[in-house]
Length: 415
Image (cartoon, rainbow, N blue to C red; front, side):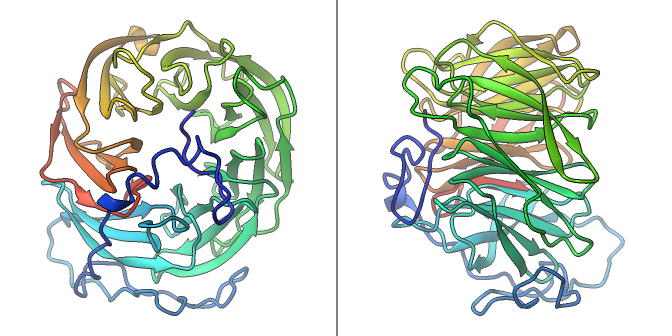
């Protein structure tokens, strides 16, 4: 499988934590915080739902930004997720900056006090960060970005949460628990803090696929039209569709889509047109084009296609699609490459173009910069983040200098 950590301070699934220890020796700590002027200024302390409303002891705080110069800032924030409970791992959420022209990354400190923040998501307002706590007693943590204050942590009700997303309305946080095969919903208040869980659904059927001992929810996202939520479960070879009651925060299942047995679906990414999506199947090393019906939320999974990585299992991890819908990219961990596809027929077809070396080991997660001109790859085993320039016309990738060292890098979130 290869989803990499299912943890409770040392109680790890071998496949979830694939490669983390092997990469520890190659990891270095984040550089010291950048000088004042490189991060947003402080805002009010004290918020509802926060343990203290203050930055935890030992956390680096940010100074006020410099006066405006009339030119757009080239340095943008980059947030980094890691595992904290392994030798050579990180100390918490990493803060960095990247040059939007060159792609060069510079470190800007670490926020400790968040255990195994292996996946990160930002609120639509831009003010709050949410991190999973990937441990046996699963939890999610909210952080106010302006002053790096932890606003509180809430239990997910399951184990090993590995994915988190924010509903487009900004009022609900969605999380997927890999270890227990469950998905959860938490309310978000006006401050960005989280309330107690409003729903928890465990995928009890169909039975686990070949080689699996139970359900393994790996992703929980909202469809582009906002009408449905989709949960990708690697253990049951199923994508579940739900409706969210936006007043109560409760889930109602509406349909299920099944891959072939043993495919191990991990990650789903929609085409910007909203009628098609692309599914990475981790276990059998394939991808599939899926048709999506916005009216019903029903997903129809197409035939498995090649990742272009040749013999051996490459544990495909995640798809990205360019904002114009012309190209798609797939991270392949075993092959240490990024597959480039041309997207054709308004999203209905992927045409494999080539694979590009990722300049790192075990690319678990990839992300575009907001303008789509840079692609970031978090390489778990090498403890690095690679940055690529994206050619807008051809979709070609060009490495932007030496990768940045980041302990057991499993998530890079450019803002």
